[in-house]
Length: 188
Ligand SMILES: [Zn+2]
Image (cartoon, rainbow, N blue to C red):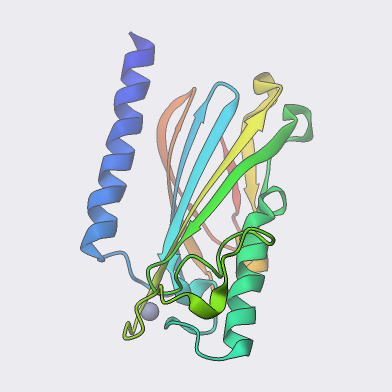
């Protein structure tokens, strides 16, 4: 019975996120949304927010410098173990990172070595004034008994980001939190 309740809560969160992302009401500079589900050994995190939080521009990259900035940002996002730090005893390691942005297109966001030929990439909307980034990051933790907090280091890595609104489902239940550079630890 408890399991079913948790599952319902999880579905509710992702539903909420989908409808909200498609409505584009989320776009606010300085703010990102984080959804986190902790279930047994697995932690799934979704971050959505204005590209301005992560880059110095929000349009399709037009110069080599802008393309390089996107690659650098993607590399920082993929270094998920530095962005989200769990208790050492929980023995967590990043499992998967996937990045998506309608404005940027896929090729610049893909991991090094798996990129398509970028010269032929026409992905990305070129006339957007404001774009968003969506990151899905998962971790596997070998010792779930010690899995009870995460330190979110996104503020120091992405200084434009000032605030994060967090919705989470953990073995302790459903909860919400607000993070800032001064308060960036979530406990459960
Ligand atoms: Zn914007």
